[in-house]
Figure 1: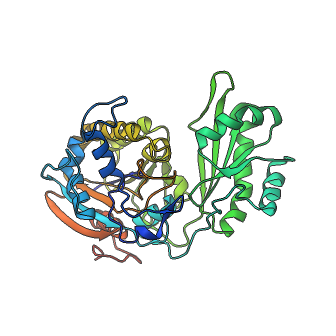
Figure 2: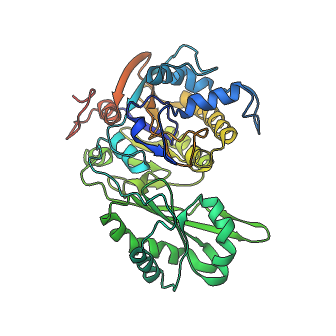
Length: 404
C-alpha cells in the first residue's frame, strides 16, 4: 500500500502568475516577481556569497525538475538549474484570491478560497480604535505596543525592553491577512500570550482575518531578544472538508509536520510534529523510515519564508535552499517502492522584490515516485488529487485535471 509525503517549501515560487499585476508590495505590482529565478541569478552574479559561494547549487531538486518547472512557469532559464529532469514535474497556478499561507495550503488540499481575506490598510496605525480597545480588553492591559506594520524580529528589538518593563503586549500586522502578538515568555508568560490569541481569534476570524499568530520571544536588551519555537498560528477553520479530512475518514494515518496543524486547525490530523526546519527535516526522515502503509505526511518548511523572504535576505534564502536540497537528497533514497513524495510551495516571497510581503507566483510541483514525466501547467488543487490517486482514495468535492 502506498504512502504519500506532501512537502511544502514555503514561499519557493517560480514566477509566471498571469494575475501577478493585481497583487502589490508597497504599491508596486508583483509582475515579474520570481523567487527562485532571482535568487539563482543573484548567486550566479556573485551577489549572494554571504555564508555560501558561487552559483545556486540544487542538484537534487534540479533532478526532480525544479528548473524545468520554472521554465514552464515563466519561460525563463535559471542559472545552474537547467539539467534534464529525472522525475515527474510541473508548475501549479493558484486560483484563490490571495497570496497567503491559508489560501495556498487550503487550495493545495483541494479547497480553493472563493472570498477575499481582510487586510489591514498600509498605514500606521493599521488597527482602529475599536480594535485597539478589543486588544486591550483581551490582554487586560491599559495599552498595547506596536500597532503598526512590522518585521517580527525588528519589532521585538525595538519594543522588547519596553514590553518587559510595562507588561504591555506587542500587536502588529504585515502585508498578509494577519494579526501578530509578541510577548516575552518569562516576564509576560507563554500561557497568557496563547490565551489572548485564543480569545481574540473568533472575532478577528469573523472579520476575515486569516490568522492570529502568537510570537513568543526570550532574551534581554543587553544580549538581544530572539523568537522561540513556541509560535502558534490560530487560523480560520476551513469551511469545508479538505484533503486531510478525506484521508483520515478513509482510515489512513495523517501526520502534520511544522505549522500544518495550525493552518488546518487540526482538521483531519492525527499527529503534529513541530520544531525548527532542522528538526522538521529529522521528523520527515523518521516518518519516511517508520510511517505505516497508507500514511499521509503533510509537511511545511517555513524558514525560507519567515527568516529570509520577508527579510529580503537573498544570501540567506539561497543558503537555506542549498541546505534543504542536501537534506532531501539524503531522504529520497529511503522512499519505498509505492511511496510518492511531492515537493511544492504555497506562494512566492521574492527576496529581491520591493516591500516585505509575499509575491504572487506559480509554484513547482516535483514528484519522486512517479518515474520520469511531465504534469504540465496544473492547478493547486490538482496536488490534492495526485495524493488521493496514489493512496487509492476517492475525490470527494475535488475538481481539477487529476480528479478521477
